Image: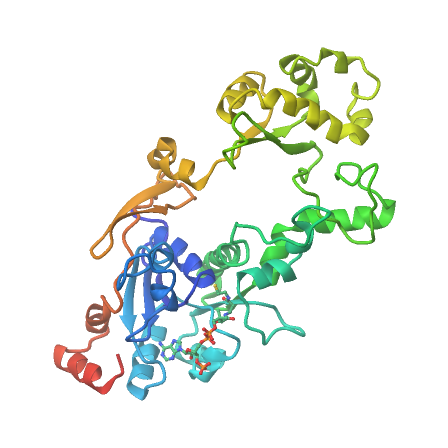
Length: 415
Ligand code: COA
């Protein structure tokens, strides 16, 4: 078998992070992704956060694997002709320009449809239709506008953005799913369609438990699994819950042996009700089993912070890995706080292809994430990102341009 998306051709007009995440995923699944960039600079991320002078940054290389790169000046008339030829040939156009930029290039939805009625035109935008639809948006703006920042952090501190790129990479994932669904629908309708994933919507989709809690709060005025209960105050909006777990199984981050010097010597500990007896036994607090404040899940809710303090007395005597080993023997849900260094060095993640080592002609070897989606009959092979314009001649030759025409296009500045 080949790859799941073999034969799908993608005209990739994406840049920075959100769009490239989407097209990288489609490339990993087997699509032929042709990334269009401007000659000279290319995707702005090639030059951002550079760790080696003159070499494509890790920011770029880690978002653009398995793609081909062609340089086209979309505002040059001859460049426009090439673009139109690509629109006719490809199945999907993906873009994440600021609102209106694609139209200004002449690629309105009507024009795209007239060139290729089967084309799927997929966009990431910061906001959907409404008061902010014309705004430019970056990751943290989306985190703030999508409800993540107001619900992240501790009660006594300001809103906090998360390290997970839920606005960019999260929205790229949403868009990829929309594209695959539109390709599937096209099998029966024969028609393309527009697909939009707005970053605010993507973040909110990932924050849905907080919208759930907003309505619980409005109805009951209190949420018993939040650290504000029972001594703090609830206002009229979902508060920041620190490290409380979002679900019905109370959890918190606890110190482990070495926490005084190691910023990641912590474990996430969940006081799951079915294993409460084992928790008490393991940490040597069997007195809690019969104590009226601790015996039932309901009774424990007002005392969660005392319980976590008690458990922490035990976790502080173990490293996070020792604690994991002991707790897992009893099926007590827990997770070590892993640093990026630990993740980069973890052999099991290398074995599954979740972390991969890639060789690049200018940079040498570097680590990247691999495809997090594993398919039994369509395995992903991560290939290095393209150099700027590396495939310009190849793609143009596929479109029927001769070597002499390509040379003329180059001297005219169209490519
Ligand atoms: N040839 C000619 N012009 C090109 C080109 C090409 N190959 N590729 C891009 N351009 C032009 C565009 O046409 C646009 O020109 P115009 O504004 O004169 O019409 C210009 O480059 C810049 O595009 P823009 O998207 O406005 O880039 P920016 O750097 O100013 O803004 C973002 C960056 C990310 C803020 C913006 O693209 C955006 O809001 N995107 C949508 C949301 C998003 O994806 N955000 C997350 C990014 S990780």
